[in-house]
Image (cartoon, rainbow over all chains, first blue to last red; front, side, top):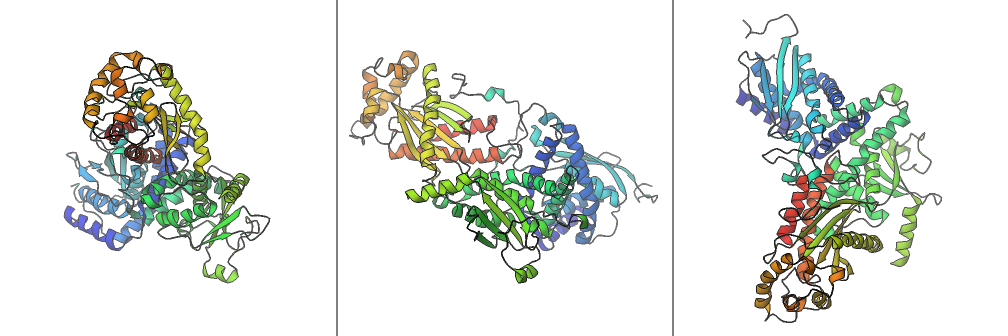
Length: 192
Length: 232
Length: 216
């Protein structure tokens, strides 16, 4: 599916087939979750990142079904580039109403970045001024887990992590996504 | 204390902060507060997050009561924040701090509920029991937080509306009306203390998820209310 | 005019403090408080908390306007939804004359020209001679001819700096508080912000400073 087609599809689904709630309810709920985990792990941010990733993974495992049903695309993406388009323009669109930019592909087409111009999860956030949070905490790390879990359900093992975040004082919020392997034996068409 | 002077006028403790900010100014302070006022996200996103919050909490507590307490605690800060956010957004004419219990409960029933759940709560009631004049009820026929969570059988007593109860409690505490707020599914009398018996069986059938948020104010709230009432 | 702005938490604990001077009519934005006056300011602000508590439950407005006065220091108050207090202490540049005439309506508009021209003249004289800075101990001393003409009576009503009780000042302070409140709400929306936590964000501080420059 082409980028523009994916984009239209995402818009269409968002407009017509998604039940919606007030964004701030979601944002505040996520905020209170992160704050609670920080408290439970006494601001051991490495552990907080792990917990968030784990939560996201659990969500991803369940969310993929919802995604496939809504997007009506049971057909497997023909290559990882198409997968990236669908993640950014359909997946993120229909759940979070944002469309991250896909960029920084490696030449082997196995690694790309999602750059978030807007990140609803972080809308009201200023990280704690403790000298560590801005170096250690990835506030939106749940999204890494969601991608990992969801793609695993469609036979793709990926590695995901943030490499920058405006909450840390970076100019962008960027997640790196790496295809580790296709889980079944079937080779993807591009890998010939 | 304030260190004197400093360039550009003003003085204070600014030097202590170590926070970094993006050069393009993408911070909360650079965005209008009303930007996300009417923004929407998918209900599914909320349902997933909420379910994860519940199961995370579940791993760290023993028993339903503790779990509900924890959900309550997680809602509390949201109530505190919404109180200021929603009052800030009121037009100047109606930008009034709630001064009495009724004004406060109306603010919750109308402003808070509409903002979070897209509609008002269904009813407000005062305890008819003369022994509990400190108890009030906010009634929601179909709380969103319950609609999206399928509670496992072994936890059938769990009421996820404890989260919403925490939000209410946060609003009350923040506004200077300290209270305990608990959520009770009507018909489930195990946690209710008798005064929550509103509605009746027929209603309970029509709205199986109907939840009563029991707001029990601290004695000082009623004392103050009596005092102000006497003055005016 | 010198200002001391404080945000006071529910336990009467300071969450934020900032002092500054007027930026209007050639003001350089610097507060002219002596060290002694600075300490006194905190004392004055804290003693006015009692008055806030008196009106807190009878007046639902957020902006409570002028609530207290201590010699030449005037205290305006804004109460947030969660009963956090914004207090602004404002002190006109002159001492005796403004305190006695501040409550009166502006007597004449004919002196508008003189007042605006003297104000720019007087400012440097204040900064060059620190002993003239207003404080209790210098209430009557150190005053000179130029400061007397700077008194509230010779100011026009549009002069925020010398008329702590004028409607214009009241409105300017309302705008200042409103802008600070917006930024305060942003600060407390963060999931990491807990009630009564000191507000240390440098961006917040910069926003308060900007509001001060803009309106006061």
